[in-house]
Length: 284
Image 1 (cartoon, rainbow, N blue to C red):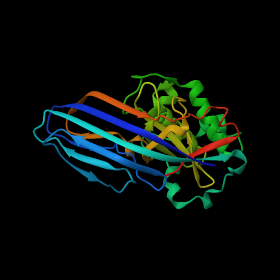
Image 2: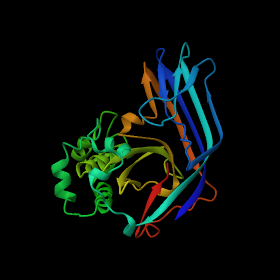
Image 3: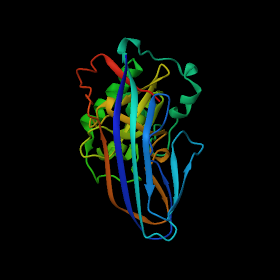
Image 4: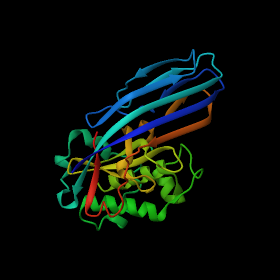
């Protein structure tokens, strides 16, 4: 079953610039066959030079900014986005051998900087290896993270990895996603990082989830349970947050204020009952 939703997105970032810096910014929603954009508007502080930039690691719509002589930087982005998601019955989700996995999904089987699946293999097998179907392994992983990892702002930083999170038992959406990815890869399930906007999430912020590739289809999971799965708008995907950071700064800058909103007048969030017996794909 294919469903459409429309969202109004607004983002504003403000920085103090401590020295001339270059920023790779990733806040633009992706424009794809299944995610349509209109009314897009992007502004930066006057006299700050910027350009759209595509790099070789994926479809992320980077903007490269050079702060020049500016001592403050303000960035504003607005867009209307229409997304399409597909509901799939559990009975139709079947695992396949690695020999049949699509080539584009193979890189998401390997350990990465924040998702050390090679270090979590024994733990993953002990907790989830007895579950035969890969989809239900991914469901069990998301449930375990929600039940056992405390959502705690400030408990982690940009150096925190999946191995750190399972040890410290605390983190934010980024850490929850990394742990889900690492556990999936440890069980030979391709998994990738999803960065995006989330409708009506409290408090409003950018959001991270993970997707697992099962039967050559990507299914979305949010182990924080803070966002409705049909209310997500994709900004980027990657091996982990290193491929999908909101801002990568070369220089010295300090974030002083950030506001993010994603709203829809007609939005009806999917409930646990709605998802009974079904999984959701956020089409890309």
